[in-house]
Amino acid sequence: MEILRPTSIREALRAGSRHGASYLGGGTWLASRKADPPLILISLERLGLGFIRCAEARCTIGASVCFQQVLDGPGMPDAMRRAVSKTASRTLRNMVTVGGELGLLSPSSVLLPVLIALHARVRLAGRKAIDVERYCSDRPAGLVLDVEIPDSTLPCALECLSRTSHSIKSLVVAVSALAAQPRISGLRVVVSDCRGQLLRLSGIEKALEGAALPPRDRLAAMVRSAVSPRPDMHASAAYKSYMAGVFAADLLSALAGKGVRP
Image 1 (cartoon, rainbow, N blue to C red):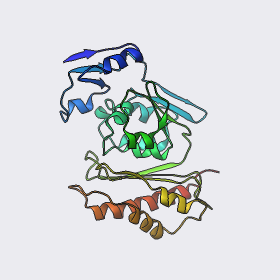
Image 2 (cartoon, rainbow, N blue to C red):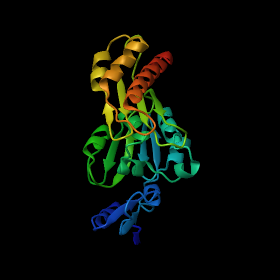
Image 3 (tube, one colour):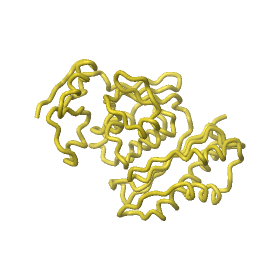
Image 4 (cartoon, rainbow, N blue to C red):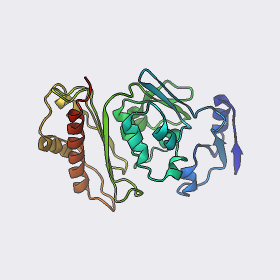
């Protein structure tokens, strides 16, 4: 196996075009032995992508920033901190990178639904930034440079389902809103079944825009009818659907209780 350490983005892209090449961030996926080892590893350590820049509520996070840096860094949205903290091992949080999470697009990612709820955009080398939602659906190839959160003050809440703190997640729900009282505004509801289905519930968002916060039972029923999650060994499809409704209703109610945004 050959390990390359480019010092520029252009050099990294040239190396990445070689047969059998793979970009190396924290290396957690490679260390797990769940993937065939690449012939060429391209380390990102010298590319200057380990930055966090927050100014006037806009945050840009470099691809080489690890989860522990997100947890400790100033200006990070609370939902982002909560998402990375779901990687319960501090050792892993010091290895897993934001760019690696996007590059891998793991079905059980807790961070991706939160990034979608926060209207985040991802920038790949040589391309214009695109919404993380579109990135997840299109799965474009390329070197992730950074992720931008346009408004780190946007209220966003997260809940997930797992057997233990260290288990792979079975369900993730993220909700954000500009306002939830007295009328709902700018709502986003994102549900992941952690088995490859990552949905933004646009129909529910449109139905509730400008409306008063519905009773929890009604909101939960709306979400349950809008999702068809896949089962796994820890949770049936029916249970995931039920909990998606419960989580979404609880999260939106919690945002409304906080007053969301004056």
